[in-house]
Image 1 (cartoon, rainbow, N blue to C red):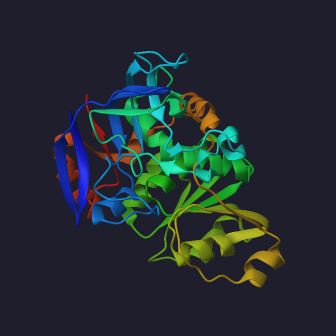
Image 2 (tube, one colour):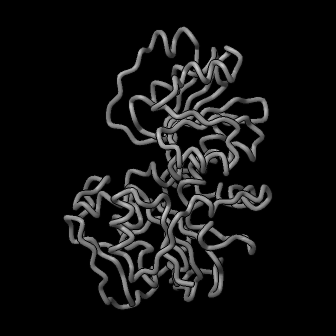
Length: 341
C-alpha cells in the first residue's frame, strides 16, 4: 500500500509498505479521509510537537476516518464494514485518565500519527478502543475534521456553558475558530469572529458569525464594547495562540466572564489584577475531548446540520501529498483533507 513519510526538511516520501495486520484488540481500517493539521507540520520540518517522537519513522495523520476491513482477536464490538473515526490518543487503558476517556492525560500518552502510524496511508491499524462510530448520514470528510477541530471546540464550549444567553467572541478564524463559530451558533450564542484576514472573516460569516472584526484595521475592544452595548462579552475563546488574541480575550469579557485558551502558545504576558482578579473571570485551557463524548458530538453535528465541510478548502489524493503539504505550509489552504473516493 502507499503511505506518507516525512524524512525531514520539508521532504515528503510516498513509500510502498505492507498492509498491516491487526493484532490482539486491534482493527484494520481502510482510510476514506485523513485531515491535515497544523501540528503535522512539525514532523514535516523534521521536529515534533511531542517530546520523544522520532521523525521520519511513522506515517502522519491523526485525524482519520474510514471503514473497518478486518478485526483482530478479542474484538467483539466492531466488525468489518463498520464506519469509524479514530481517536488520536493512546494510553495505558488502566489509569484514572484513560478510564475517564481523557486518554491524552495518561502518563504513557502516545499520539497516532506521531508515535504510531497514522491515517495518511491506504490502511492503518489501531486499537478497537480508539474507534468512534459514525452516524450513517455523516460523510468521512466531516468525520475526519470532527476528530480534532470540531470535537475540541465542542468540548470547550460545553465546559464554558455556552448558550443562547451569550455573546461569544472567537479569536482566530482558522479551522479551529471556524468550527467554533458553527458550534456556538448551534448552541444559540451570538458570535463575534475576530481575525486579521478578510477572507477568513468572510468564511466566518458564511459559517454563521453575527459580527466580524478585522484586528488589523479595527479597534477590537471598542468594537466588542459597541456590539455588547458597553457590557463586554460573556465569553471568549482564543484559537490564535498569539499574545494579542490571548490578551484581547481576557480584556473583552465582562465581570464574571469566561475565557478558554485553545491556540497553542509557549509564553504570554498578562495582567492578572486588571484582567482576572478585578473582573472575577474564569479562565481555562482546553485540549481535545474525552473519547466517549464523540457520540454526543456527532449527534450534535447531524441534528444541527452543521456544514463542517465548509472548513475544507482543498481535497487531495494521497499521491498528491507533496503538493498538499507544501500548499498547507505556505498557507494556500485552510483545512485540507486526503480522500480516497
